[in-house]
Length: 102
Image 1 (cartoon, helix red, strand yellow):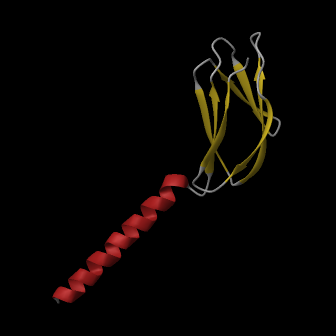
Image 2 (spheres, rainbow, N blue to C red; image 1 turned 90 degrees about the horizontal axis):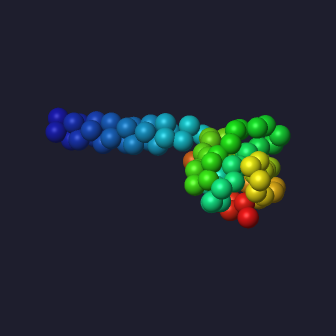
């Protein structure tokens, strides 16, 4: 009886661990863009879709399905952006770029 309870406890713990890992990333990865400029608002465009803007010192973070993406960071308030970047998103991983917008 005691060994049965131990086995059941181990099964429950392993199920909890595996299910909590799957919920954490949901099969997707994350793209992050950090605006390191001092005064330039930057627009984030991923594969032709505008995801909005980030102010100086802010970070943009968005979950995406695994794959390759073209990320464009455009300066829209007088400064430059970073241009195009090809990012590969992996499941449960974070990838990104930092842009100073000089």
